[in-house]
Length: 493
Ligand SMILES: [Zn+2]
Image (cartoon, rainbow, N blue to C red; front, side, top):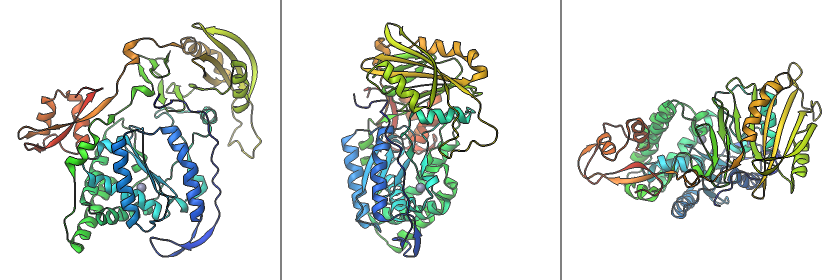
């Protein structure tokens, strides 16, 4: 099993921030920093396993070797060459790149699939290394450092459900740094400088902002955090372009783009959701690796992450989630969960679900006023929880359904349908589901991108995605011998 969907909770990292005054390596100015270099490295080292644990590593040896080589080369010419840099590709379809203090830099497989040459990659690499060398993360406030694994878009989730979902996957909080506009501008500048210094054409970094702009304009696309807190990509495209040209005029020479070699490198990269992490089809969630399935209530929104699968109706009046419970048997798992989630158990009983040993539990969330955590505004409403623990394949899964006490009985039937429908997955069609992959083609004549894609059988609904993926307009011309990307399922060439 390459990637285990549900990981056991790690402890939430608490960043201890102390003040120290030192010279900023990039600006050379003395400033109050929140962290010493030693603390930065310690922070990065503790965040790294959480990031890899919750997103998974995308295993591709030649791609990993490439980002290591370029990363080390760039780190050496940066303002802080002596940090213990690490460069990794995480298994996420979202187009994103991020860095944490101490020199830990991450690219998603989604962003790697969207680059169209080495120069675009080098520009973003320089931008992320820039956040590290300019100590942007180290300047953040503690409150901004920890943010949550995403919740469902378009659902008005009540704070009570939200906090319960957070607690159920405690430790799955990702260290994501929200960078301010001024930090972004500074990093863009460093991206131009660093990528130019290792010989890449930084005007291509500007062009990549065009790709980001098209992605964010596309409706229904999750907004990559790489840009959600960032200034308008259109403006950045212009500014970075100007800086890149200025740098090249001052330092004349030949700057590399390396399109074909980059495309060869990503030939076969997984594109979009990978079914091995679980997928929903016809209102059923299937997990081909862990070999189970259960029904998703019709019309509900859902979100799959490596640590939990959440479901909720659009009005957010109730919520269900599947996660792993800790314990060697059902009773122990139920006790651990009640303790972890601060639940008062009302009743429980052992039972069987589709032949598997199970334990059903009804509980309510203890009203918590301790821990100095003040409830804002009116007193929180009482939340009741129905939980079903199921023992299957040496793991204990738990499905929670939660609703306000007043509405709980109305929701119970919906909860029961999903929980009672948890079953073994044996259907070979679902078990063998393969992800889509990017494949590289060579144009055998002069034609538009659209003509080339259609000749390869691309459907009209995919044309827009494919044009963004290629960083081109559909009307752009391909000349004979020019490479372009298509999408194929599984191992189809
Ligand atoms: Zn940034």
